[in-house]
Amino acid sequence: MGDTPVECPDHLSRSAPPAERPLLVYDGDCRFCYGWVVRWQHTFNDKVDVAPFQSVASRFVEDLPIECFQSAIRLIEPDGKVYTGAEAVFRALNYGSGGSKAYWSYRRLPGFALCARAAYGVIATHRGFASFLTRALWGKRPPVQATYYQARHLFLRLLGLIYFIAIVSFWVQADALVGHDGIAPVAPWLDRVRERLGTQSYWVCPTLLWFNSSDEFIHILCACGAGLSVLLAFEVVPVLCLVLLWLIYLSIAVAGQVFMNFQWDYLLLETGFFTIFLAPLRWLPSWRSEAPMSPWAHFILRWLLFRLMFMSGVVKLTSGDPSWWNLTALNYHYWTQPLPTPLAWWASQLPGWFQASSVVMMFAVELIAPFLLFLPGKLRLLGAASIFGLQLIIAATGNYCFFNLLTAALCVLSVDDSVWPRFRRKELQPLKLAGPRWPSWLLAPLVVVVLTFSAPLLWESFFPQSDWPPLLQDWYGHIERFRSLNSYGLFRVMTTARPEIIVEGSGDGITWQPYEFKYQAGNVQDAPPIVAPHQPRLDWQLWFAALGDVQGEPWFVNFLARLMEGSRPVVGLLRTNPFPDSPPRYIRAKLYEYHFTTLEEKQKTGAWWTREEKGMYCPELTLRGQR
Image (tube, rainbow, N blue to C red):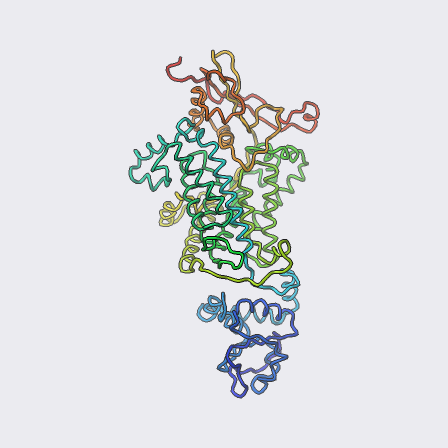
């Protein structure tokens, strides 16, 4: 790959060409050349021979002077045809796996060959710097084609665990949330949807509960989901498990109404759907061979992580919230988030300069690290590690159920197999592939669909008021209801106050006693809880309800009614029941504003919170016919 100008023929006329296979000839004294030839050999599938020109140039000296081999890499075909530089590389790769698209582009895509030859020329004349970049990105070992089979194993196991956590977490609350005696019973809700939409209701609200909306059937669905998630964790019939888990969780999410309308529920459905095409097409795991992995499916899941993080960073800046622009958001975040942990109290005591610096680092991770996921070697690992580290910090200071674990699992897919042997075995054994994989003719169009709808979703994060192209808007309306191609934007607007709802009951309308929730701030002496990865969905919904008013939260009135009825499943979601013998005749809700105590206040009083009454959230209510 030198820079000596010589006249070199493109066909051998006197020298003996290779016997049966093409021969790729490179500069054996160039470490950069050697490293990349070793990388390419893994894709040649023994269909191309390679050799340094120092050992074979004498065979072709009648046609190709030594300067020809010094100036550029050469591919000599069995018929004597000689290819040079970038074309030689693409044509050699075309014999093996993964090079057909590049060579087709070189031959047929306008401008591609020109750019490829120019890039090759720049690299050839700056091999020292190119070698430095190679070592910086891949280390001292020769760069090899990245594979992700170990990552796939770990990712499938983690996804099985996450499905299990999500389903069981909902299962233990199902009766209280959407059961017959719950806050938002699913059966009458589905009846109202069917009355309003008719046969379209099955398409608008895709859920298996159309067949049976009883409490028993909900339990059966959850039990099946928990069992399938265990099978997935052990990679038993993974594709079938993933299809059924996606269908079950979609059914649960639709039936859960307002209680299952969180971004991580959407993220789990999207992740679960696209993982169907990443999973191995086999019944049981094998220790002897790996099922081939589709690069298309692998790309979609990394693209999902990119959208999740990048859009979350963009929407903070485009929301107009001044706390993000003046770097004061973390001055509020730790104590205003829905369910802080005890460590959040300590984090809130850190000085303002540290909080501002943390916001800057957060933006760096959300806006820059996602791009590193598509770069080679160490840069890709740096991007994944940055996102993973951010998730650890978020999980340490806030209870965000399975969200952080799911995001971390997506990071795993950017860690190639060359990293894992350091922890699992001393050296990487030759990889044996066996079995079918998802065909490209199916997944390539899927990638096109994902990218097509991702474009307006990303554009919308930059320009929230922008309109979609009408045709795309109509098509996306059909896709959106399945919650498997979504827009994301975590913490778009930072809340700067923490209102809390305190529910009180009374038997006579004079003496009032408070209900205590399990995880929301109540008693100022109680430390913030650690509850993740479980999500107490009533407590989460109360946080959102406190930011508005009771007229916009019809479920909250239903919740109060269930307390006056003494619904055992609903009362079971609370920490205390001040009316164990008979439910209260009257009920109301007050609004308080909470704030973390300072270090001095905590040392003096032992309290984690301070609070101030702000007024009535819901006026006194009683069941119809009791007054």
